[in-house]
Amino acid sequence: MIIHIGASSKMNLTSTQAAAYLDAVRPMVADLVDRNVFVLLPFTSIWVARERLAGSNVRWGAQDVHSQDAGAHTGDISAPMLADLGCTYVEVGHHERRRDYGETDELVAAKVEAVQRSGMTAIVCVGERRKVAMDEVVGELHRQLRLLGSADFRRLIVAYEPAWAIGVGANSAPPTYVGAVHDTIRAQLVEMRAEGRDVPIIYGGSVTMKHASALLAQPGVDGLFVGRMALDPAVFSAIAHTHVERDWSRGG
Ligand code: PGA
Image 1 (cartoon, protein in one colour):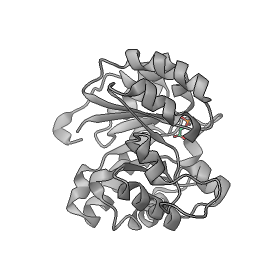
Image 2 (cartoon, protein in one colour):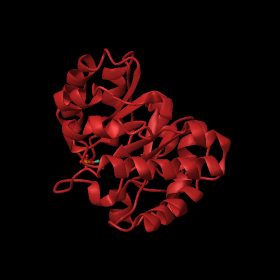
Image 3 (cartoon, helix red, strand yellow):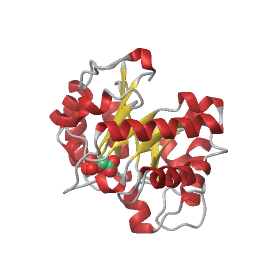
Image 4 (cartoon, helix red, strand yellow):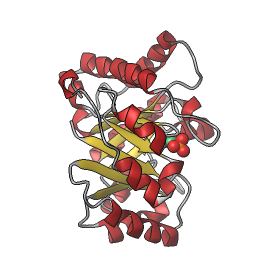
């Protein structure tokens, strides 16, 4: 399976800053033709990505979307609007949106459908809110994933992002733990549908250069989703170039 390396700038990078950022990132990762590299920007900077990344190996996308395609939803952005800007990906259900806007698993599932209706790939974030025992983690993931039953698995990436590992002051979840959780996510997806075998499962939460190679060494980890460390183009590029030392015979 191909390795996916994504960045979300979250609420950072004005359109002017995004131009400089993308102009720096693009040549640094141009050699990574055998990996899937993507950046998710604020809505106001996506047009810049279309301008600066067209024709490159870097794909772009958004960090959220409304669940409906059009209508009376002041201030919201629809999937057709994002598809029109050339987005390949739309992230949905990030912990910060669940926390700040009370987004429910049901709403997240509706957003996944909206993204896919417009021909884009949904990156759906799942993960436990607090550090709890593994069986509770599995239960929480089960409830989040179950709602994706009618999603198109060919246009889906699952991002495992435990809330406690995200953001300033947090540390990446331990690689072996991440590997074990990814295995349970995989099992759940396959149980839902045979195509669940091919849905990429990536990890996000305080990914740094230090942890990247141990995380990617886990057979169940198909890629990394990088937040604050990706704001430095050189660091993002270094993470994207991480050498993967893995026993491929174990799958992945
Ligand atoms: P972080 O963000 O790398 O800054 O922890 C990761 C994420 O929220 O995807």
